[in-house]
Length: 114
Image (cartoon, rainbow, N blue to C red; front, top):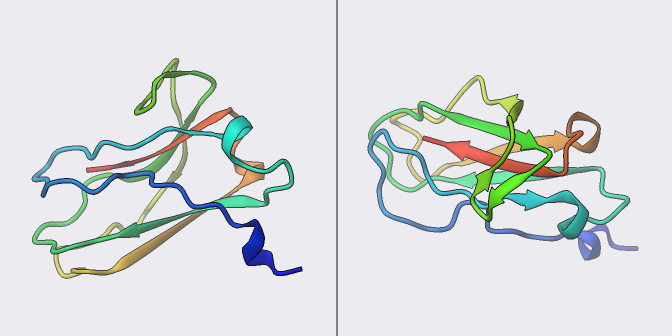
């Protein structure tokens, strides 16, 4: 079986305008609805455009509730914080963030970027 037949793609951060020290709008991912039961993890691919400053925040958060499609509810907890964040010279680069299912215990997951 081809493993790529089991891959699902989601638009976590919809395309938008250039941000200057402001957070991007990010969609909440519902593990129960969107991921197969036998999923091993989730891979975020962060595609950058032109950059002229470093990213201040690039992390993955989880929660047991969601307020709406773009906001985690309750008290979100950090699942993964990218230690080497994109810098001012990382124009048009890709950053990969893998979160194994064992690290994600709540139902909702969201990538946050500023």
